[in-house]
Length: 399
Ligand SMILES: *Cc1c(COP(=O)(O)O)cnc(C)c1O
Ligand SMILES: [Zn+2]
Image (cartoon, rainbow, N blue to C red; front, side):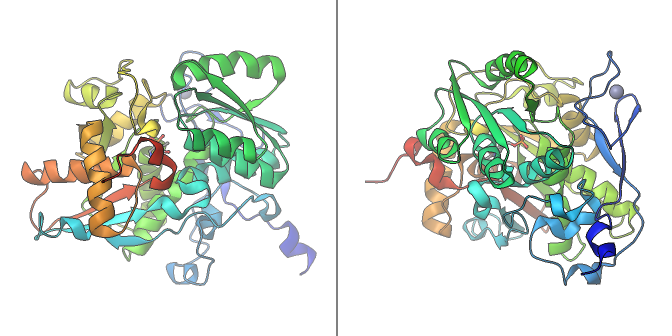
């Protein structure tokens, strides 16, 4: 390899922009949220979207999310911290064939990602970028999966991870953090309480925080789901995408990906309708969507088996609601009982042991199909965000 290939930038990243007030931020320094004190919105990475490669060239790339490295924020390939995350399979949802014979319904199954959830995507991108920017200690408040992913990727990067997690989270999520060498702090409260405490402690200890959408690059990792959906459906997007919405990173990221792909000329202007699915415990987005609010209120009804969805007030609620409205989408609440049933039924009928967050989508699809919000002939995609094995402590086992 010559020096040119060693130092050539992998990424077309140009700067960061605030989607709310338009303030431009440099991408060569550490950023959190918009510096405008009246705004503080999540920042969007912006790329110089030139067609430097063709759709066909993609086929020669490795089967992981870094196949889209030009549109990811890490400038030098040597900084990429990867364990093969992404390029997950798309599988027909065969259990829905009897219920919806006129629809093609698919899973995008994220359960095979390192540490068993799609959090690996966002964390791989964010840890890589943090490494590139010279950060040493990374901290995150988490409902479970983000903590495990951060702990693993930090270990791989030779960095230190600090994880704040609610005490009520199933044991496996805590054990994996400790095994990967992270400092785990258990909090008597929900993820918002973890967030408040970690804010104070990060300031004192000089930790860099990777809280959902208060740091620009986890979004970039999760947006690769949008690139994959387009590529795997041969550049014909499905009509409806269901997304289990906690902080909303994937929902916003997938939408951002479609915009970028259109700018690249790889897809047209047609977009899927985006459906946010929430747990009965925390459904502030569903409430705000139906009452036509631009932001959501704090809602916390306590424990849910879908710990990834126990987010009382997503930081980027405005962006989530904007995507739902722009896409002519919808928002649905699902109960823990419905998720329990779906996890068990899907395991028996599809051979997939999926996370309750993913199972919630299956119930939401059935509701929207029954209400004819989904029409015969439409193609729908359900994103199973996690591996059911991590949740078994809270899943009823048939006798
Ligand atoms: C974190 C998480 C979610 C929610 O993801 P957001 O992008 O924050 O909305 C959904 N499912 C699982 C399994 C998760 O770990
Ligand atoms: Zn702003």
